[in-house]
Length: 203
Image (tube, rainbow, N blue to C red; front, side):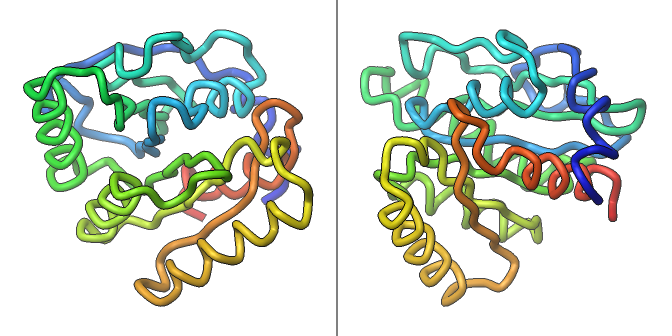
């Protein structure tokens, strides 16, 4: 499906609620999760997808938000903004709580239909990125590795990074996609809206 079909739905996204425990999540509908390192631009990706400047809050302090933030996409579908990971300054207890929350979410939350793992194209597939992909695939979920900040590299360098990620992921699992993106310039925005819109509608 094209972006035109879904534009109004993306632009109509609104904040629903924040939860700190799996049992607080809605138990019905379809939910698409967004995960990523605290400095990968996850909030900026969500804001650009939805055509809004401050739907998902960005922070100068990585790892500050340790809640799952939900946004409505339509009456039966939601977006889930997961806590960022890789925040070196966070206490060990906070990191452990994050790991438990996210792993439980992937394993137990029935409405979850897919995961977008957002990475900095200049530093893709960190140890924690790989862990996130592994958790998602262990739950049988499709994964899109979104290499954000493509504007920071030349086209050739970006395509080379993308090829490397695709090659490594293909060796592990056929259920993993990868794509370049720039939340700053909107490069690949139409394709991304259409692809994720198809996931959310079960197409």
